[in-house]
Amino acid sequence: MASTEPQSTLDAVPEPQSTTAPAPTTTTPTTPLPTSIVILGGNLAGLGVLHTLARHTIPALQRLPSQPQYKITLITPNSHFFFKPASPRALIHPDLLPGGEEQIFRDLSDAVKQYGDLATVVKAYATAVDTSKKEVTIKHVDTNSPSDSEGTSAVRYDVLIIATGTKARSALWTMPGQGTEGLHAAEDATKREWERLRTKLKNLQASTHPHHSILIAGGGPVGVETTGEIATLLKAMGKTEGVTITLLSGSDRLLNRNCNESLGRKAEAYLKKNFGSLVEVKHGIKVVSASDAVIEGGEQTETTVELSDGTTRTVGLYIDATGGSGNADGFLPQTWLDASSRVITKDDFFRVRGSGSSEETDHQADGIYAVGDVVSGSDNTLISTNFQVPVVCSSIGVDLATKILHSEGGESQTSSVKLPAALKQKTFKNKMAGTLLVPIGPGGGVGQILGWGVPSLMVKTAKAKNFLVDMVEPAVTGSQWK
Image (cartoon, rainbow, N blue to C red; front, side, top):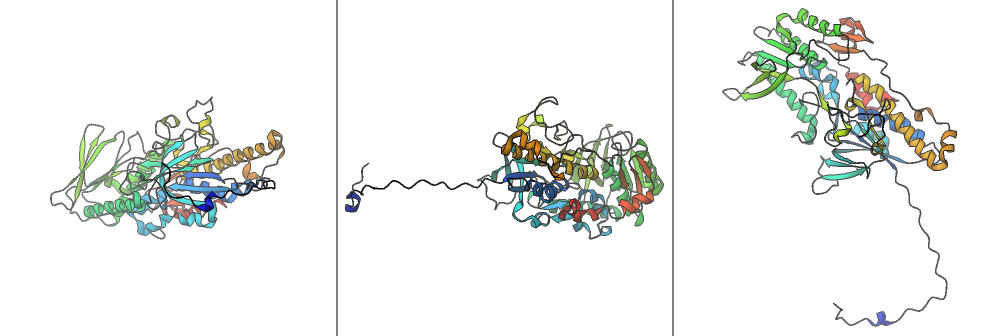
């Protein structure tokens, strides 16, 4: 509809024609976006990659002729780093850890503040990866973060590192992630689980519980270590009469992965020698289901466990230490994962294979890497992760440097430039393969180094005294990767 308002007289006066040539149009050069490096996961593997990239890889890349800029975004639903290897000690004997249980929880801001604008932490978890757009869709935990009405947003990536680790069946061993009631304060959720277990244990010690038996499922290091911690506590307090700790291995022996067969036998013998009838080990039996019920009176609970041999048991305390699966099935295609939801990589350089076969290249996975326990075939040890980190960072450095040099001068430029050590490809080799130390209480344990058995005293000195908590500070601050 035409306007009914009178036209302004000024509007009606035609503007004079210019007698000079129009000024040349100038365009302001746009500043290229920094290369976006996104790390999913904020524990040992994710922090290791962040520190190595920030301290070594990126400074080396910035010495190339184009001096590109970078931005690292660490995405994790947790606000704290959690040193999981010390969980069995923190759970039962936190007073024996230097600094107590708080020592193994560290604010992630301590890790990134030294890097200024280069690195930032976003409290969220990944829900999808769009390889065509090179975007990660994330669900924010912090409701104050910029996002849509559902709390999601998209983060652009040029490089994507999957370091999401594993998800355990129990919050005792890994902080709750997406979809859990502990999401807004994951470390508090884990601490609550610890406190619930400690309360149950105190009731057993006080002989106020009608069921004095303890069942621990899982014959790996965590299950064996937790059995030793609880047995040591009960023995020290003289509360062993009428109490039985049953450890289910689910296999034909304890410690049946990543070690010599004899080590599992030694662990069982150590338990028998030091704790006698207080501990019994049963092999080849797994837990099918477990359900809690409130005991009459409402102050205590009991757990009924259905076992794979067809029997059921009702116990005062049940601990699931059976490990977990890869934490990548919530955002990656199933064709990228193995049967345990761990990420399949192309080779020993930790580039993600994608949906292709070992002989084919899936370019949808270009620029995507995996590291740590989430990698298919990883032995899920701290030692292995520490050897993986420099390799995956070298892969990232090589790929970015090749891309930069190729765009500047083609293949001749790429081949003529001598790259610094940080940009040369490393190959993964676990130089400490066959090394496993398993404390069975503060007094010692069993172990092997490079496949050779070591005495209990060495296990006590190396790990049983403080469960490696002296490694927390270097891992968080990055001094481990100097």
